[in-house]
Image 1 (tube, helix red, strand yellow):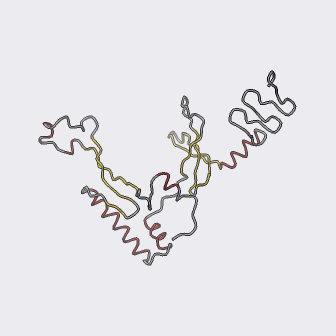
Image 2: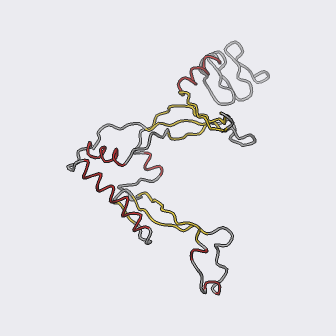
Image 3: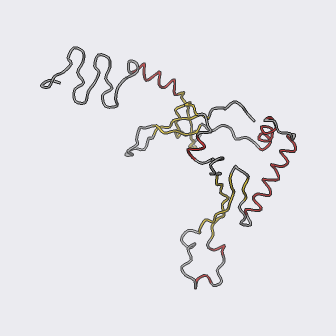
Length: 214
């Protein structure tokens, strides 16, 4: 097994929806890397000290990709050890999918009410192998990376999405340069050494304030 944790990058994206209460604020997104192929995954496993060669591991994984959907298609959930469980769910047909009453079930064809069958994955949530939400976060090492922005551009008459990345450290350095360095204090009136700040009138060393003239 690996002894060194590789950090998961966290990017920040600004909310640009006008009228939103969160407009202008930045929210985290995972800096997703290139998807690892089955062969690459097999190599990763063998590099972690597996007693089996890559070809054997790849063969087993290939069998899983074939057999798992076959079983789920029969309504059989498949649990892969402490990883979690793959299981099927039915998506109802819009407007016509709901069955009104028992009488309507007579001669009913399920294909008329089921739009699609989805394979879902439920991570393991036991105390020892919890892969859900906050508990799985504890298994990750997070680091801030970029401010991410996506814009629509027209190229040769076709609209495309273009994503740009700016390192957060660069953005912070630019902000400090434009605003005379870092600020200190609270969110409403950060204050400074010469102007330490208070609720109504922060005052300063030269004008510390009083009851009549704070």
